[in-house]
Image 1 (tube, rainbow, N blue to C red):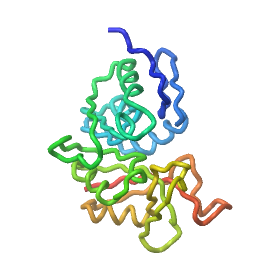
Image 2 (image 1 turned 90 degrees about the horizontal axis):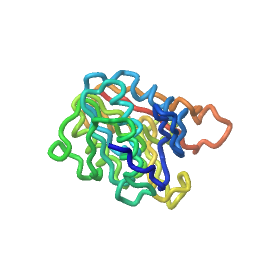
Image 3 (image 1 turned 30 degrees about the horizontal axis):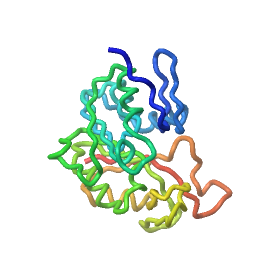
Image 4 (image 1 turned 180 degrees about the vertical axis):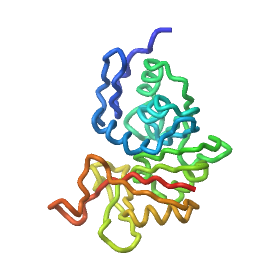
Length: 230
């Protein structure tokens, strides 16, 4: 079977295929490789994995490459919802890589054990700040995570000693009107504990200096990767 034509809609993830083709993603290969090193640092070999908000599928295919036994990629925002992309990038990468993973177009509010099953590892990457009800959305991801939930998100106000979350109005966060919330690290960890996770590990984004070490505003947003175990 021949590969489908490369999609003309914008790419979010940069894919570097074995034949040398590189897709024009807005998130570069260097950033994705650095993020994957943190996200998958505890390994996924032999695990079942759900990728919520898969977009062009980089982390889904990376989990497969790293030996995950079963991978389900889901999205709605980018594939058929209000996001600026569609599923063409994912489908193109799927064919180019000869992947065996599964995919399902489903929005976060519909995620449940009945709709997507239970998985050893759940990825919830770059999703939390796009939802209007972050605790409910996190609960949806947690409900299908049997062992480990991995969240990558924007954070803010990490210097404060209390668990708080900042609301962004309009396109204040990243010039994107679909961005709403940024918890601080204490808030994100507290929400995870509230949802039944016992051990929490926070890792700063590998390519960002923590905002309290930068000479700019106290209010500057940052990014973090949280690993939360049952």
